[in-house]
Image: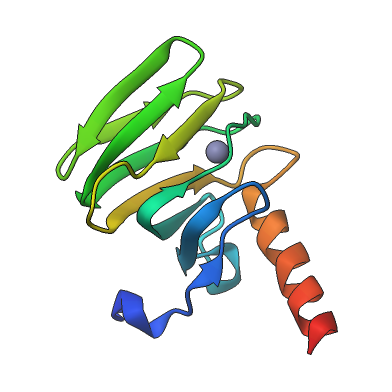
Length: 131
Ligand SMILES: [Zn+2]
């Protein structure tokens, strides 16, 4: 078992197409979590994630702040305490339209062929190449 503070994990810029958004991969395959990952995102005022879709779902819990959850069916307001379920292959985007930083957990499975964790590994390789 491991117990650690989320700030012990480095915040990295989120993927391309995002703005003012960082991610901390709190629990990962590297640590021995074979089935799913826990990530904490921080989105400052005006920030957003890309409007995208992929073959894995998101399970989101809003810890702080407020904003908009956008899908092809429209947009819904969210605030601290809200839960957002984004099914696989459905287009989605989160936006911070408030004044405070939005903090949320986003859990993703490692069960699909195109795995979320691969993005992290690619990004780490890219980062180390830049050093
Ligand atoms: Zn997504």
